[in-house]
Length: 495
Ligand code: B12
Image 1 (spheres, protein in one colour):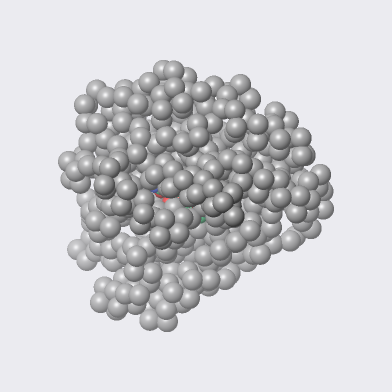
Image 2: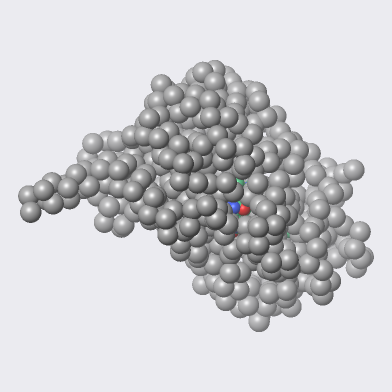
């Protein structure tokens, strides 16, 4: 079923209605994120509606009311990406500022229907509908359902039949199952820089690109299958390479980031994307957060290096075989070991992520992961250590937590954020053990301390300029951290 046909875009009305799409994400760490989702929606609506994208990342809502007054939109869409920061020790709850600095001020000056969407919204749709008093909400992807919702509202039709749509006052708290998934290849390019001022992102950020939707993995704690669906829908590699080439023509040298849940799944697609980029001879700077240890190979790394990858993230969560199994990661210890060796062999800068305290974690399994980090991970690569697993609705971890009495039936998982910790390692002991690891390995950093001080960033920028370094920032920061650590140890010895 296709709800919306992009060919119809040109059949526009005499008087185009106006839509304002607002990005409510003000988080600037680890770097500011351009609002890819609403830029895609704006590209889909082009020609049918007069669309403006308000980017709140740097403005933080300050000029939003003024914009509403001058633009007078017929509909206002808010994108809600982050709920909280998923760091148990310092939980930042983003929704408060989204309400006070974006949604409430707008509701005070405009009668236009408020429509919500975004990945964070899709995880807790009913809670956020209730809290904001929004008129409509759309869970999951918006390229087809959003234009269709607008069409129904324009024509005064009911919207009850539309998949993924929530309405004010419907009061349900049930899970929304996405019944409708788009064919991702039919979606126009986001052309992010046409919709927002991209200049602040050129220095400190990336141009985001998605190569697929969906996640077929079954990691027990993860929300991705619930947000994007459980089946992969891949884009044509040639189209992706063309999108990068066109953006490079407009923006010059910039870093592109693949924002897929996992870049190298399903097997073979990542390789084809790299080949398509290599064929164009465009040499972009590339990075991705999602390298899964399962399908890594010499061929993949060789192609990634030739295509222009300068940094990757790898998220094994654990290197202890029982925990890998309990978290349903879908790969083995051998896969992680091979991946670590490949990152060293190709000297591809890598950020590693480990997550301690999951079901079945014991002191012994922590030791297995520690020993893996010491033996196999390149000392120049950063290793972020998280403790505690955020419990999300409709995940296997929710069921485990209920069974073990960590949460009660009916308990809200929205706020305050509940975390799961294995009973075999009390929190104090886990924290102590992780502190020992971060003390021994200068490249291991607790998630709560992952933001470097402004002084350290300044120092790193200075060194990079002086030495003409093009390596990822984290490598420069790690070296400073290591040298400062050594200095402190020497000072201690002198005393
Ligand atoms: C890639 C990614 C990252 C990358 C971002 C790189 C980049 N260049 O963008 C990195 C690793 C840096 C990252 C960091 C963080 N992330 Co992240 N990230 C993701 C991921 C996997 C994909 C996001 C994405 O770009 N999707 C592609 C775009 C096209 O989709 P979209 O924006 O969702 O838009 C679509 C729909 O949502 C909808 N839509 C969007 N807006 C609107 C508006 C309206 C009106 C409508 C109708 C529809 C609609 O339509 C769009 C098109 O289909 C999601 C999980 C997921 N699968 O969604 C987590 C996710 C968004 N991240 C999350 C979090 C928490 C974070 C961090 C706070 C973690 C941390 N402590 O550092 C930071 C915040 C960074 C920041 N500055 O905001 C959470 C947010 C939920 C929550 N728990 O709060 C998610 C959902 C993962 C999770 N744990 O569940 N992240």
